[in-house]
Length: 556
Picture 1 (cartoon, rainbow, N blue to C red):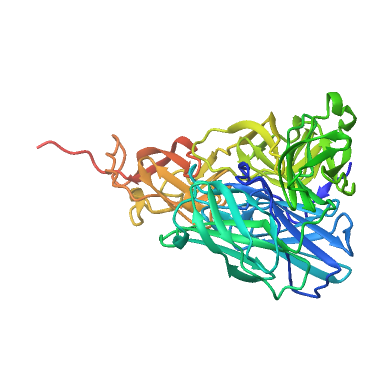
Picture 2 (cartoon, rainbow, N blue to C red; picture 1 turned 135 degrees about the vertical axis):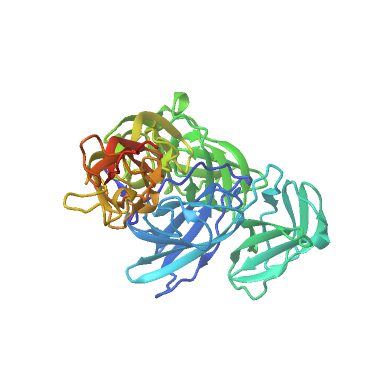
């Protein structure tokens, strides 16, 4: 069984992926990175949504080639971000290895803000990198969005009338800014008109660029006169070039796999797609449903692998694009994998005690890295993924009561959103136990209650047992109704405390007992509480306050 193993531990902090407001994923130009930079290594970044809502995650895929061919499987790609964390490990940096020249990650934003994601790779001592801007938007159903650009290419001299189509736009040309960036140089377009569904802008010129074509990420800023303008990223909305290429070329798919049921939203990334007469897209020999077409990307719904598409069932097939007007068909080197629907059949090590967590293996089918895993609703750290097996480490849940936490195991394929729940998992909340209280009174043998603190307390006591909180700040010990001081020398099996000061009245000497004889003045319960979980254990009548007795009162 072949496994895709991340160099760093993966995390399933991913709660859920949201559909892209725009029809297409996006890719910037390759960036420059540290080390020895060479055009022999190419890194391109794509995303399922460049403007996701705050608090959600978006898929990012790096495509890495060396001398024009996909890099070998297992090539490390280093991702980093200056905002948010990666769903694979909950950190701002992660390393993922390639399969078929691609490496996917999920970026999650804790709030609204812009994230600059960098991916770098080194092959045979030569390195390159790429950057991508993701703008997490404030959570709202009325946020502006861009669906597509028309046209999707124009000459380097500028002057192209470009229409950004979408919705929820606001403001005027004076309060709207559209920035085109080529090779790290940003220039403002001239905004002509702003309506609720369209923004019309004249493209700037880049005469200094000598390449026949150049990708131009666009930054759209609405409400520049407001304290908090809305910023949208459109990384591959527009390409500067002399003319549209009549030969279609497929570079990558996002996502590159989906279930046999079909209807997975797939973006075919490449160039030379005919936006005028349209295209046909084939998965193997089965035609897909085309949703939208631009110069460098086609959005389709994958055909089902049943009925007419039975030949695709559980198969990996080539995806090709045919320009309708010319009949030219693209290369067949980029493939799509049909998989069974995600299903969970069993889980190993499904009952674990908090504080003593160990790896869990989830068995099933249809698993595709990267994945998000939750155990009883708690995100887990994913360490490896295979088609029928996932290995992960349970996360530590936040406790609100002393009861055990029980729920299902859930798995979601991040790039397709396909998921399932099944099997059960239980977090056992450790409950403290008391085996002995030593000494069991405030005057140890040999003590002189007439000269020490005696029945008022203030003496060292060891409470022996198990599952005591490891943090003394989360430990509460009471002798009766009085709270005791807990020493920092305490352990999970022994609490070292000082018996609390108390104002117990001296006992009356029994008949025939000499005044000053040590006598039990009060017997109290000893209670230990874990303040994190609320779990409490009580040793009934486990401690005695002993004081010298006093003579019985005499009548008048």
